Image (cartoon, rainbow, N blue to C red; front, side, top):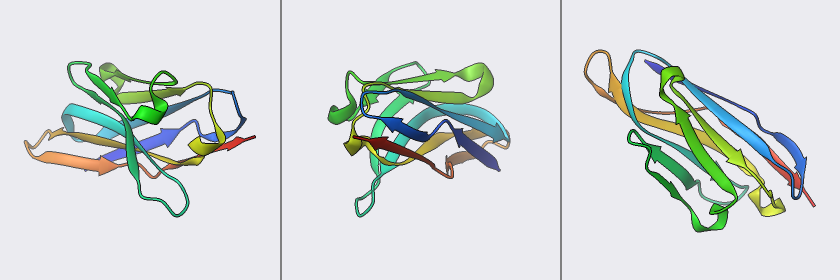
Length: 120
């Protein structure tokens, strides 16, 4: 079993910054990719940033240039640095990890989500 724990959400004014963290723990042999999704009220969950084991990154257009995803493999942790936040960034943010367990099986797990609220 793999567990993802997110932290770092909160309330911030427009133009402010936050850093989200997501730590994976459990029977992990390797993590191939980690990603951040968000879901605003009444909207579908969307992928906004992803990072692979070789460090390649991808971003959804609305966050390019403002958000930065990174990972610390020694800690099985991914981070999402969010700058110049806008009210439309308000959502619940979820992390997701894809990898291989110590038992040799593929896994894909979600974190529980952390609320980010940006006031205007």
